[in-house]
Length: 188
Figure 1 (tube, helix red, strand yellow):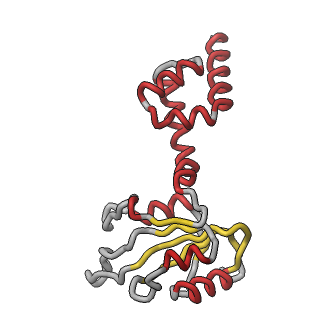
Figure 2 (cartoon, helix red, strand yellow; figure 1 turned 180 degrees about the horizontal axis):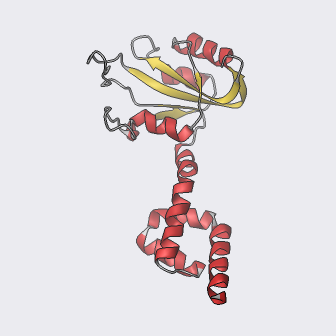
Figure 3 (cartoon, helix red, strand yellow; figure 1 turned 45 degrees about the horizontal axis):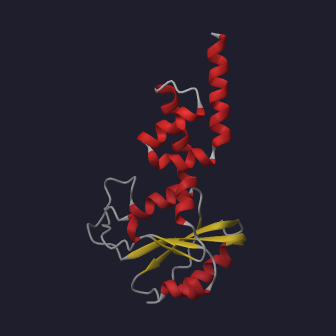
């Protein structure tokens, strides 16, 4: 692990040891970052005691960085533990920030997620949701027997307005899909 390199690294900050101005510190190193809400209600399942208040975080570097480079940065600048991990699934990490997929754990509000230095949360969420969104739109097309792009736009505008921007940015894919659906429909 220590010889592997990545551009996305996860880390932990403990409230008791993090600098009070941790956001300014992160901003000063000019690396896009995202932080979970303070996890201050987590319970140790073995002891039943509250865990130390902490934040999970992720740094998004422009280039590959080693374990030791990131570990030293977190330790030196944020007084965090030196253990860092490569982020395997940005979406999984984001869900863990709020415990969205862990019903047995305390849930935290997405509104308390912090980010900066150019990290674009809305773009991140859109990229992570794109597979789900494509599936949802394909279901809409099939369930409503839509064969024209114009009809898809009208349906989405009237019924699923949050998806409108997504289909306008992916016009080529959806129009080709509808073309092939029409073409196959004519051959039956």
